[in-house]
Image (cartoon, rainbow, N blue to C red; front, side, top):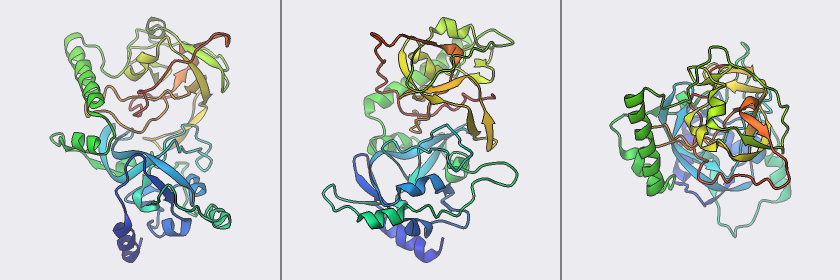
Length: 340
């Protein structure tokens, strides 16, 4: 990105907060903010995002910090927001089905008034032409996406830096009661680990070889998450079933009834950048990790949790009620995927 373009966009960047209405800038303006690798401050503008150029959305969350699966740390990120429920469809990344939330740099957006005039249809159509020429599939078979580059797009959070909680409150990421609840539960999990030896991250089993089951679930089907006791019987000592961990964030959903959002058959593994295959695994509507084990107060990535079908059972549609997930949509699973 040229120094002129950088100066121009930094001067017009507005601090965006939840509830504000923004318009995604036209692709040529966004391209002017990117370096030769298609990134701004280490964060890629992905080809899947171009179709949103020229369109208007509401800011859902300001992102001041985020968890990074590659490093396993909570890290600082700046000048970044989420827009409503805009998620990556994986179309330019080998068909990855993780459906990650898209990170938007403020330089890629412009704030507009709710009563402002919309772009002309012709201009909107022109803005949505996918002209992103930056490669995301490397010659060695690896992929580059926002999730794989989070270590480079973020900075380390010093352990003594308590300003992160003030930033969360100021950005309306968490209310004070919610922040205190998250922090207190994270402290409880660590005290329990110290006193009992139980993991503060996963539900531990006793198996050496874990079983599998295939329900062939399809989007829209209703399921019930099995009891904690039943799921424990499918896990090894590391809390995994065939490499996939059942994290403490998943325990509150035990016994609940949910709708299948989709199957997870391939996804980009962030630490390795490789597209890997999974079997007998699904994601559920509105069921995401709340980061309850994170001592730094949770994370807002809202990645879907991955469910082995052996942890689920079908329920009849008649009389079934979907369990509410309000308040459980904040953060990403840091440790869930360890293999296939």
